[in-house]
Length: 241
Image (cartoon, rainbow, N blue to C red; front, side, top):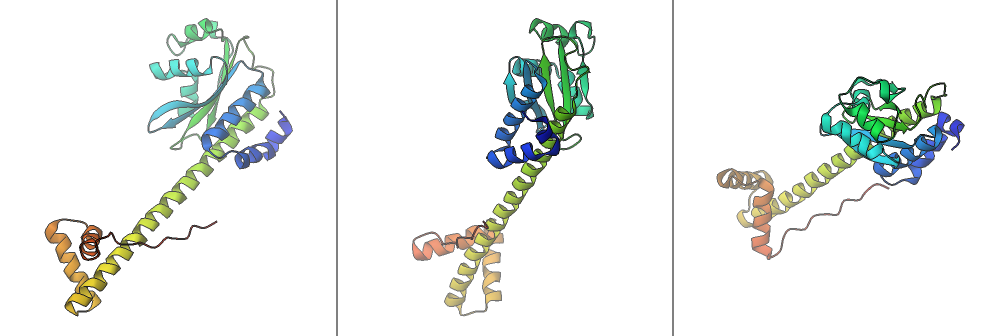
């Protein structure tokens, strides 16, 4: 693992281009953190719908140590996630925070941990968690590359959310345009039947929608289906490439 490439972002940019999902990107990031730190385990915790979950992990112990913290709703990775601060534990045998979690970590063979915040104070806050067997494993080490990984994960999550929101907007726009097409077809039918204006035809359909307490699009679709014997056609919208 090239720490310089992590620092300047070129390595992480390549991961973003090569992976086809946020989960895949975060899994690559967890594996990179493990290689850079020489820890025994690494995991990425993300809070979704108010509940933390491990979305990527590498090495040993990360998953069960994360789950232990979720179960008691307390621990170093959750503290980092919630406060946006780095949480470092030099020796779990001397740790008095987080209930019985330190003793559990010791039983799992993990004596030192490091949690770095990801996307702090956002709707998808998280933490990059590193677990090492020796005590003080993260002391007197250059943590710059690991901090850069956490920062790049923040950017990756922000990008994924932006893409998701863009796709959601595109889907909503597509639905609206399809509905408009069905309504226009029904307006044409009413105009032909009643020899009226488009405005008058729309009023007829709207009144039927209100009277039946049915969405206008559904009223229009029912009308077209009853006349033609098949559901109305909608245009295929061209996706941008």
